[in-house]
Length: 205
Image (cartoon, rainbow, N blue to C red):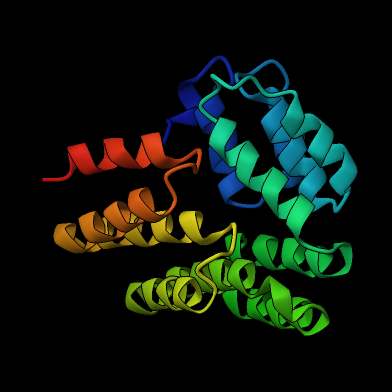
């Protein structure tokens, strides 16, 4: 996915992904035109600009066959489930974290959850991101699993379990990853990410 950009003559989706992962939002807006998943990337720009209605509209334009379809579904869920005041802080939190300011991100998370404690599960996903940014993968996983235990019926629980599994894989704990993925598939069989997770299980060593 990492590209030698200096020798490319055209922009690819993976290049735009890397810009997005670094929080270079203005560059994403400029470079995403015409690439696969354009409406998703445009939606991300609007999300971080806190124009959530515009973001929702753009995510809705993405084809179900797009490799970014599940990401767009998650963003749609976030916008619909989280109240606007908290969501503004959470958008700032995520942007701070991906710009390598996890402590600043955590402060925004605190502001968001103070305004609506029912958003705990989503807040936990951001706290996990902050720990991950600090290379504390053990705590990043624990925050996710604790949130699922505290709020098992949260619509975000499948996504938290998936992320925990991915982090277990990164640590080489494949049995733990399989357990988490299997729990997701059994407890949330209707989640749109189940097919992806089943494929992850098949690919485990």
